[in-house]
Image 1 (cartoon, rainbow, N blue to C red):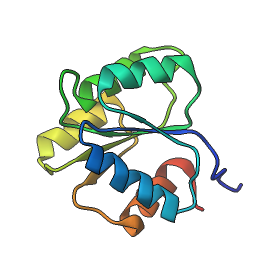
Image 2: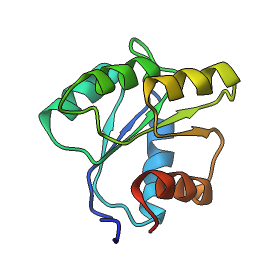
Image 3: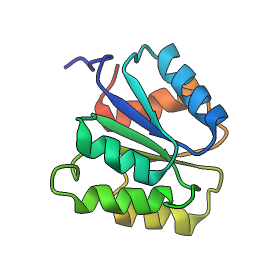
Length: 128
């Protein structure tokens, strides 16, 4: 089954530069329907207001971290099945374990490129 490159994706990061980088990498991979949120609270509002097929979120944000956002998404009956990829600058084992326990679908350590993003996306939403 082909992946719909127009599927709605929400990227969440408190740094505009990172949002731009992730958006550009997704664009390189052919994804066109990308929305942004600057923190977990804004992301939750957007997730509850419309359907997204994927969330790509930074871990380190204030006031709500990516891990807290993930837990909120997994606790919400309407959102709990939404694929979720966490991005972080830290590859600490305890962080990976905490994210897995909270229900993350995949994990990306910064810095990363389009090839890495493609591999992680493929494992979560299917090959494209």
